[in-house]
Length: 354
Image (cartoon, rainbow, N blue to C red; front, top):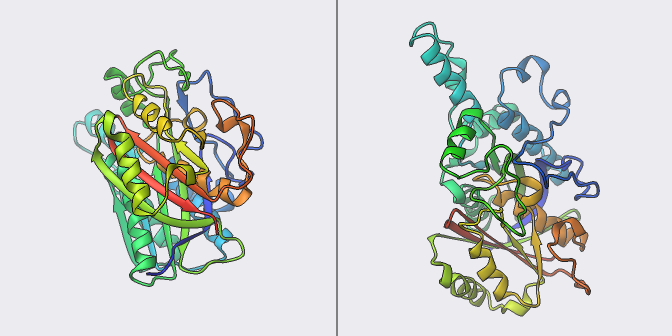
């Protein structure tokens, strides 16, 4: 079976990640209840006339995918695969609001056409004039991981040379209000200490993160993508067993994992899953990211971005630690990402240094 390598990445998020400097100047969101993406210079990537017709998720995805392809030094890909939980929710809300406001008459069709979940993958394909495999996964907290697994299989089993895989979600005002009513997200005025949560719900975020997966190792390769595993449900007291079985499959022990990346988001109802995972890796560095980027369905894509950066840069920015270790690892050879979304959609992603 062919190996699968991450050869390029692009990220538009709540941090200044588009320049790919790996959190050298992190933005402090410790008092935030909402983390919106930092807007890049769209005009450098998208014709000005088209910008105003696109939601932020589409624009951010075009920028992130272009950066990933540029970094991987490819102009064509053999597939475009995206994962999203909410899709282009801003256009969905816009269309439904007009539907009510105009009593179902005199509606502009553009927001409806652009509100589907596969708009992002379709728009990227139009820009690239690509007629190749194009697919979108909508599986809540495992949406991006499903897309990633598909992309990895295309490289390993279908012998595809380069596959573009991305995770994207955007914030919609009406959806945010509904999420707050049922304590999925923090209410306005509630801030989250991710490492010492006191209230229900998470700080909401948004991002577009894209990766170029390839079968060939290059000079600018980040890491080898070894495996992606997903489970819809894992009992809290079975997290250790879930992780151990995954490591055993790859003939690894918990001592072989140099850094484990965890998705703590400050929700008192569900962060205990990560406490169970922490107990598995007593000698591994614990790395966190949602205090900087927020929570959203496709947020595991940020976790993968962090893991790839750690392996390539061979260092972890201190802002990603809860407690900075007194002695850091000399090398990061195996990095594991564990995430779950509100007690469901558990996943493990394993990267290896090449």
